[in-house]
Image 1 (cartoon, rainbow, N blue to C red):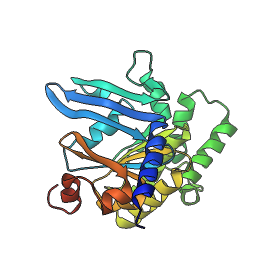
Image 2 (image 1 turned 135 degrees about the vertical axis):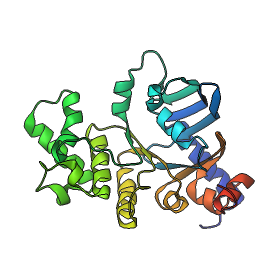
Image 3 (image 1 turned 30 degrees about the vertical axis):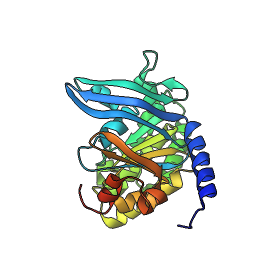
Length: 271
C-alpha cells in the first residue's frame, strides 16, 4: 500500500468517514441479548454504500448475530432482545412501523450453506417475484434470466431451468441462492460465510461475484477466512467478545492495524 503523509491521511480518513456518515445503513449503539446473555456491546458503525464490508473475528464474537440483526432475522429466535438502533434509509428498522417482511426484500441474505428451495432452478428465482405480486410470465422469465446472469450462472443452467435446484453442484447452488436474493432487487446484500462450505474453485467464483455485485449492491459479509476478507472487501470490522475493536479500510486494517487485539488476531496469536 502506498505511504500516506499525515495531511493526506487526515484527508483520507475525513473522506471515508463522510462516506460512512452519508450511507443508507448505520448501526448505532447497538446491543443484543439472548435471554440474560449479552452478545453485542454498544456497536456503532456506518456501512458505506456500494462497497463490500467484511465482519471478522473469532468464533462466538457476535459476527453472525450482528449480520442477522441488520435484516431482523434474529426476530425468529426466542428471548432475543436489542437496544440501540439500526438505521436504514433514515428509519430505525426496529421501529414499530417497520414491516420485517418488507425490510427483508430490501435487505437480502445469503446463508453459510446453500439452501435452495425444493423446486426447479427457474422456480427458485420466480418464487420471490410471485410473492411480490408479479404475474406477467414474460416479465418473470426476463427477471429470472437477469438474476441468473448477474450471479454468473445463466450460461451453466439456461438449458435446464426446469431441473431441480438440488441437481446443481454446491457452488452452483450458492450462486443460485445469490440470484434468488437479488431477483427481488434489494439494496443491501448480507452474506454469512457464503463460501465456507465450498471447494477452492467454487470459492473463487463466489469471491469474483461479490466484487462484481458491489457495483449495484451494498454488501456486508461475515467470514472466518482472513484471505477472503482481504481479497473481497473494501472495509473491515473486527469484533472480539461482542465488541467492535477496530473498523476501517481493509488495506489499513490488514497492513497497519491500530489496535493490539487486531494485530494479534490477524497474525494468528489467538482465534
